[in-house]
Length: 107
Image 1 (cartoon, rainbow, N blue to C red):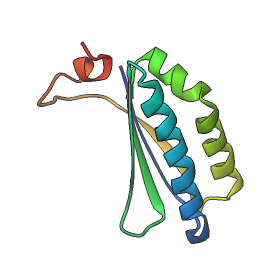
Image 2: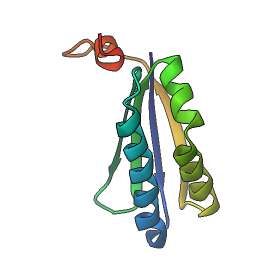
Image 3: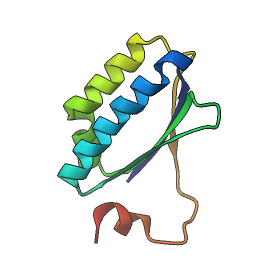
């Protein structure tokens, strides 16, 4: 399982468009309901700093990466010239109150 945290800040005038692009990605994922992928996005109180959190298998990562709405989201975010560029961090699980592998794979 891969656990990834991505954080970046957009220009204030791009925040609504970014939210809209994220909503398209999430709607596509809810329709697909892919096993092996749990993906959430949050926004800080400043209204322009986004945090993405994904837990995925290799297959789940491939589904996300190949999703047209996700590719559009990434392309448009880059073209917007973020105030703070996306910083991706791979995380390693120390412990959890529930079985994350079962949560991601649905087993």
